[in-house]
Image (cartoon, rainbow, N blue to C red):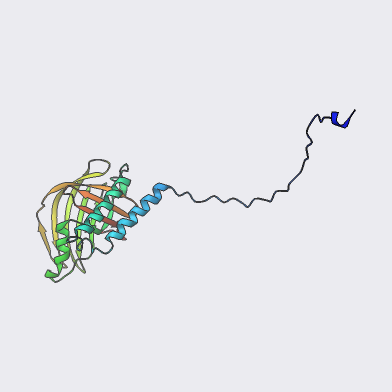
Length: 215
């Protein structure tokens, strides 16, 4: 048989073995979700905007700044849209960071006319006992507070009714009559801050105080 007539019935195969390098050990990475990153950045953006506003005093005459802050609050409201903010976590002593409420800002700004200055401004909420105290302190001994009863209206709305008010000094107390009712919505709530809109289209940003206020 000629060489040309030879055929190969199967292809020639060559078996080779390559020694693989050992893989480095695998350590699971912390789970970071887009939603948590979005919430944290939106929250920090809001806190940055209000950080130099003296609880809202400087915002009163700065329309552009107010618009920026309210837009940041609206963004937080979107993130908190489907959450329940009227449960047990609402009960706390909340300390004012920023507001548009004219009455509170007036007292904070004009306290010097009475020979004092405003200290912490607080909301003290007790969901179980259905109470709310709005408090403005005047260190070392003065305080003005308004007592209210509350009712949970929805997953984010609370109705309130003022029941009494007291202006108190070191050795004296002057009662004032109750003067109104309304509602507020906590549009965002976490372990550190709470963001609120109310019946008068006012805004409030508060933080959990490091203490519990008592009458």
